[in-house]
Image 1: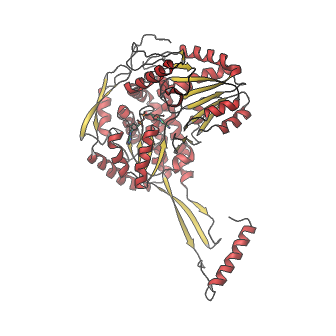
Image 2 (image 1 turned 90 degrees about the horizontal axis):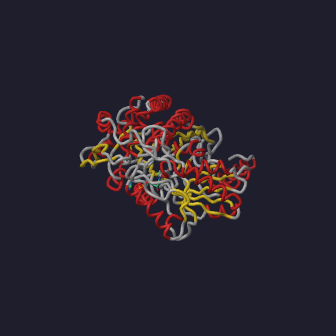
Length: 523
Ligand code: NAD
């Protein structure tokens, strides 16, 4: 592992920037909390916290702003997204510094978030008008019944987002909600609140009406319920356990929710895979943001014929990774974000090793680089009964398994309660697609790790099983934020017996009509 000396660790932000962003949150009534930079442990800010009155104020303000926004033509709404796209790219150095400082990740992984926001802004700017256009539907009596389906925004959408991809997850789900005519009350994680506040500031400079995108601050377990009590829809990203709590609370109020939860994502390297390409991309797929990525690969099933070559190349690439937190692109892997993250990673590796697993690369913390650095780690001989076998590590740890056939690879890949992302490697993409269809995951990447599916934002992304039931990206990523309203206009004749017609004759006539419609193959 390369450990060249670092020049400027990402551990502080200009106080002028912090003081400019903090007032954008509707917060301050509850005692503030201190937030520290993972790279060195230096303090970033005293973060104001929201109490009940703040949360109420945020929702009242958002609701008022939403009523006006809903009547703004979609074309004008998406013009804001276009300007937002340009500003984010133009001012990326500022947000890259904020994301790195708050999360400890490397600049290259912070840039992935900038890219994510840009492509989502562009996609929904281009598609929202079409997706929100009213459409006609066939009436019960053709010609006489005219039916139109309209779309109505939900109202105020709560976006509760975690700390690991703070820009992508707080912003890319808010953009389609806003394009659809909703207001958003964001609850970014305390650790990464400045990232969300920066996005709100930029959106307002791009023309978003003030008050429409609010932020409240606090621990989810403290203020989550208060937010859900006031929201018209909840978009939640986080662990499967918390997802259950959110679903219960949303269910109690009979409001919708979108749940983007955890993963224990498999990669399948088939016998005919391009082994070198797979070994190279596996590094990115396993260790992006030091493995603190819901889509990252934590299990790799490799066909016996190519196992030794794959493992040798993958371990060699992994050992070459440069660890550091400087604000430039010289380091590939940054720090973990919290003490509890390094505790989990350490516990999973120690448990596996104590029970007989072999460390092929990494396997230790690096306090010499910063409090939460951990070497990208490859384990072999991981078995049922070891924590890392089934539980999500959410850190830079992957287990490799030797399999005797493609069927065995599929069977093992599917032996998990999660179903978020998967990756299949084969030179025969037709076969790989057939295998992909058998893998129980919301997205499957052929000859890629996660970026091919994740970055293709015209297609939906989300999980199966305990990875959640929500979808972001694509038409689904916007439609979840709207309700449909059907307006049916009956003309000339009522849908009832004509004057003098008995109910029995009406039933006979309609039976005939139903038969004719079926014969004509009409819906
Ligand atoms: P977590 O569930 O403990 O916390 C995630 C967020 O939820 C935090 O910001 C927390 O404050 C908030 N939260 C906690 N309890 C809450 C409550 N009762 N109401 C409202 N909010 C509450 O998870 P974590 O370990 O901090 O985050 C990592 C998890 O998130 C991993 O499981 C990861 O896979 C998942 N994740 C999923 C996706 C996805 O798109 N599927 C993306 C990123 C992270």
